[in-house]
Length: 246
Image 1: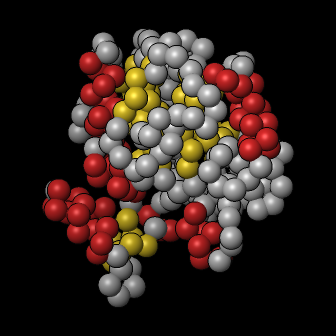
Image 2 (image 1 turned 180 degrees about the vertical axis):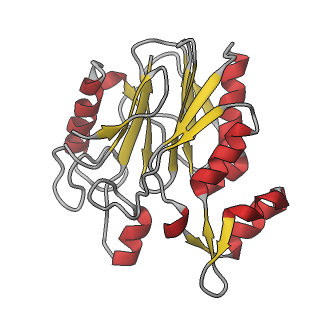
Image 3 (image 1 turned 120 degrees about the horizontal axis):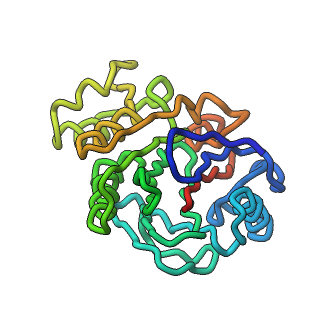
């Protein structure tokens, strides 16, 4: 099994698509229950991921991600696939894995340097614009966190992320200074730096932030990508998982 790590004091991993049991087109470490894959195979894949951290399968948690700024404080586990509608989790409970499912959106893992609190956020452009990262940081600080660090995991990068004005306009309506995160593409289109945008929002709150240099769209061997699926006219794909735990 292959996964990537960052400079975070808490145990964590940004997992690739490899090392699981799902068949094509979900091959192989698909960890999403909502994409049409066999729930049994997804459960096996999630158990493999949980085992990497020495966790029982029922201690690896996920949300029904809906591109919001909603944050859940986790105190007890819930059944697999039965998580609340939200896009971030925070916890101070040891032995729980907080998981984020992505296939181009940015998985963001956060913790304090003392190893007492963790957070995991799903940041597509809509969630990032709505403030999911600031909401995650604010919730963690309300729970006592002081010195936070974050890592932005594999996601779609600027060279692969062509957008139009329906994305650029609301981003610039919030802050015109973010215009430098867009470069000109073909006529009427722009290339958007999603991880750079997430990092800017986090750093503005005082959180030291690292960006992993893995582009999910460009690296089909290691990552699922929703946009690559659309361009290839594929019927379905899987989703990778990123996990942090105390």
